[in-house]
View 1 (tube, rainbow, N blue to C red):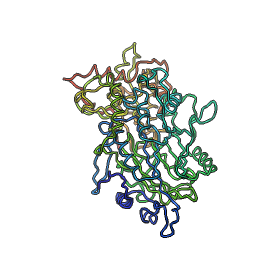
View 2: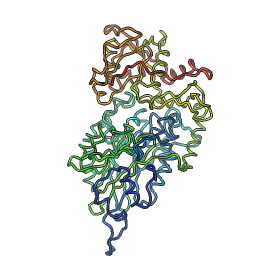
View 3: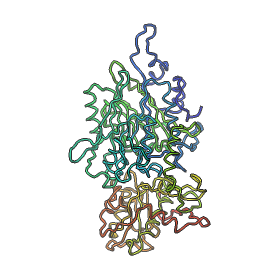
View 4: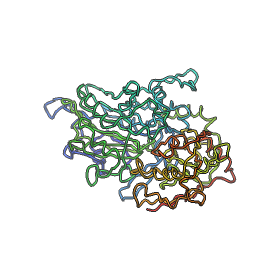
Length: 605
């Protein structure tokens, strides 16, 4: 049986398999009990009702509207084999996610499905073109019970998020299908730590309680406190984002007072496991030793009243136990992104105490493999929306000779990042367009690779509008501003210092700008200032430069305060229009664009 197998109805073999695969478990004695000891519903000879029942918690995160299987490296997960080798397994696509979840639920009297945020936003064209209504419809069909908000749920602001929750047609574009009104999500979006500046109250429900046959489990949902730093100013206007730990603890107390003793926190913040393999044991050598990042401190600060943490945001896969403030192990999980994995967690619920028996909690990530049957209702949903999108999505924009990696690149400088920055510089260099001499692109705004293989009937090497949109789905407006040389240098240093020191955000730069990034140093010193050159000349701290970037960076987003200090702003076309114009101008079927060399930043390790 492969490590991608789905949970079986026969519980004992499943537990043996999970243990063999390096599954994070707590309480070996309990795990070694007969597999159905919690589920029989009667005692050993006394015919007494069982004191516990097993509740299956299925979870995933960071779907980002990926209804169709993601292309290229974005559509694979790394899997470590028994001999230590690592293979890439194609995964994801909502047709397969629906099948996986439905299979997993079979044989479970108690099953709840939850998500860790970023269900929508930065979505491929199939969902993004329709303001993510197709994704909400798909999640309704999948029977999602609850999700936290993520930062991307705020891309279009709180009013649009409320529409996704409550339904109604888009205020500008109206209804997309004749005679059909968008119904909204039939699962609650939870936003416990997001309040209105005017009222001081949460903009959506802070928590919900899932109930079945007397079993009650509370879910509290929060997004990362730093959301305003990574979303455009318009998206978070009028909102306040609060500390994750304080918020979860506040509502855990409230639920406890209501008699809800079993609590799961859905937190859109995450960590970085020591291995990218989804089946890596991050409790080796000790509990939680294999994970780092913000979620570790959050987990250590959240009240012991909370029994498990479903997390997200970092697009990583992990199943770890991190000690709570009382020192007891507690499960912390994340299922990568784009629907490529789902997490299956067993919560043993004590009917007398109404609490989870923490020592019995077991969890594992499972691959949403593409060698299983597609869910026919999802296939129909995708076909329906594709038909509406086709006139726009299938239009050719340009040609490439090979994959141009963006999200899938493993280097600080991304080949696709160079291409996008060059497109922005060329589009905004003319005097009447802004007179830019250099362009910066934020790496997080590059959402996919440009893949050579055809995604539909367009032919290999053809870049369609839909594919270009998938790479840059935000349609941010381009800005050109005045910055001094000193501010330019400060911006480059902010890539690796301040809020970006622990997890650097390396700006993608246009042709002509070069410098050395020394990763053996720390903080701002990683940028070797003496090596910074623009068209061969050293940057003059006192000189003024015209700099092109999207409106997110121009607003100081992603911790780039120096870029937010620009003056004499000129607003240009959208980043997507600039990119598509560049593809059209620089490629033909007989002379396609080759991947850039990505040699502008010299990296010392």
